[in-house]
Picture 1 (cartoon, helix red, strand yellow):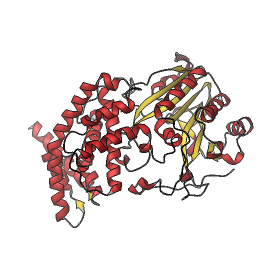
Picture 2 (cartoon, helix red, strand yellow):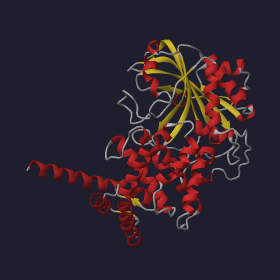
Picture 3 (cartoon, one colour):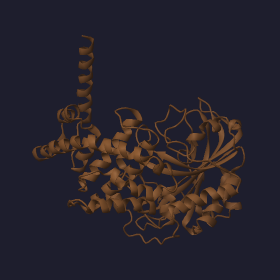
Picture 4 (cartoon, helix red, strand yellow):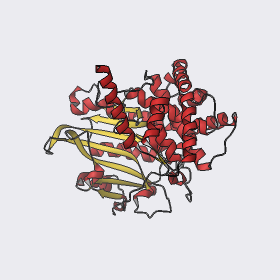
Length: 461
């Protein structure tokens, strides 16, 4: 048994090269759709009720912009297990992490596994089974359905959770060298400062990335988290055992697909590749602009990811706006359009790629086809409205980049772009970053605050 050798890894474009030097064999030819299907059928056979994905827009939960984890639709059941109509549930949940506390937007395209939209496979128990049962079910799925080799797997447990450690060692018969004890900040989960909580155990995959030692956590990819909600945390931190312990598990579909398909990057998995091939085809129909190869790859991944997120959000009735969920959607669409322009695509981007999204995910989510016309209409309208703004803003920034040796977009220029031309400050930041520049955001915020105060004063007068 050993402990992780932990390192902080910054999110930088270098991570696009994460696969260099790796020689991973494909574990199987299992497509993402087959993994999704096998997961649901396996847990149905074990007595779980299969439910469709809940909406991305949470119902009756004002604390969240979007459903960002598989357990979100069942929060009330974890708080009051006796109210759940089913004791065991399995789902493939649509999730979005963009905006608010959980925001991966700016990292998408530049790292192997950040997404705005993703799917979380989960199985949940509200008093139906214990640690031993769920661990056995999970391990059987990993071994028999996914057929992952044992020597490429490791698990983590909370250092004080001796019961879970003994289950892995004595019942699953896992080599103690493959069981890692971790501290509370790594293996203890809670719904908040107060409420249900408990230890968790996670299953990891050895990427065999030879740049890192065997005990370096950067070599290991976590793909399944199993949470044992067995306590209630009070406001003073006191933990009280729950009368009805629950279980919450989550396995990212894109992540497990990359493992099963022998890929080092989620964007290289089959469903993403269908969309990216569509981007390639669309790009070839326009005048291709010379780009650094890695930058071009990043832009294609941004378009593919953002097409998924924007289409699913619009299909649920979210429309671009300047506030709340609508503003997040607007940012996603505009970031995709800007990436498309840099790829040389001067016409529609997301609407032109919608058929690729249907080919990749339409069978699993028929609403994409059922609401096709209305979704495309919203995407087209937002792209058209943004096109002139983007062209004007890019022209002004290009001139600025050529005239300012300080490599800082001033607060005044940033505000002029925003106030006069409607150019979002976050997009100014993205473009500046791509050119090696920074933006005086603090100064912009100060000018914007003063502008609002002047506007309020004029209203009163």
